[in-house]
Image (tube, rainbow, N blue to C red; front, side, top):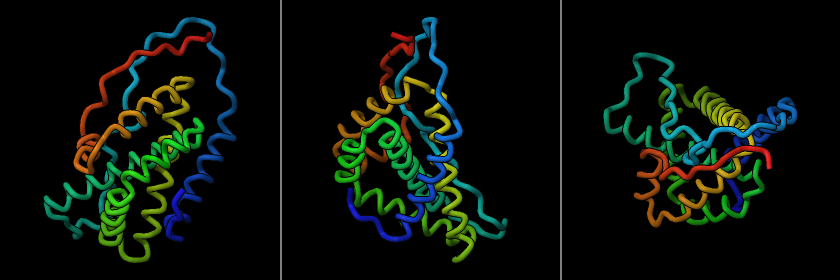
Length: 191
């Protein structure tokens, strides 16, 4: 993996600590004995993540800033979901390829997110608000993955294939705002 700036590494460590805690508390899933219904494979994360509101109603963003903020949050949401998948499903090589291919674009989205939190909450409390948001996002994605059970890794494999097939930053931006990729049907029945 590429070396991360200290602040980003700290955010990642906080998210991973939350992930480890959730994993430790979750216990083992119960094996399924009956055939489960077929489930579509598509995005393993919410397509559009929520941009938290500013701490004061006096803080305003222009319409174009709101669009840029939402887009950046969606890109960071994808990055977070792929990181959760990489750690959960041993898909680190795929995550590394994603970051190698899109790192400048992901870092630009991270800068937009950083700027949003500084303005929305202030220089010092903005960092705390951002750290809390990033950790909560990873935790929510982990819980969502656990709810998918054995299909999570199948879904994340399909997600990585779809993302790695993209050839431009514009295509990535469209991917994180579009409907899920064409559904592939898989069964989570016990073999």
